[in-house]
Image (cartoon, rainbow, N blue to C red):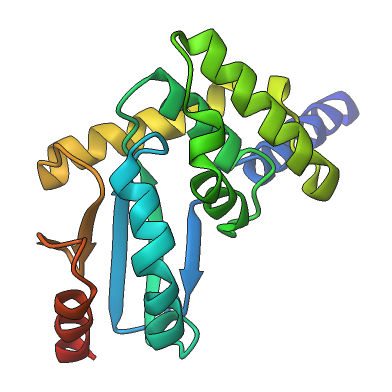
Length: 194
């Protein structure tokens, strides 16, 4: 009987450990907000970087900081470099978007080269600089199979559930919003929902 109890204790210990290792989605804002925005994006997509540089700051000021919306960033990698960068964005992540924004802000520094090896080298240099701030291990992140599964599942869900073919694609309260580059239209649309 004692042996069985020890085995159960060991199983429970490892089960609870695995639950803690679950991939946390990257989110911002008031998760109880009436308006829920999902953004499917690819880290090598220049339009996605433009969204983070030009649309996101206004979205943050007008809605996120006021607790009026929640945003969840989901993965839709368009190539292997974006797939690897997505692993970095999720690795050691507690659900915040700081690493994700950092990768978009510095996209021009790492998305260059003739091969995936060139791009990975640039990405590693950037991550190593960031590592001194938050402790992200490039090699560990790239080898994480749970991260790979999470990212690929996001892409599958996007294709099946929302028929997504391009990035960035915004889903607002379950409906596809077609004009992600026009903040005035986005703002007006969100204001109608609040």
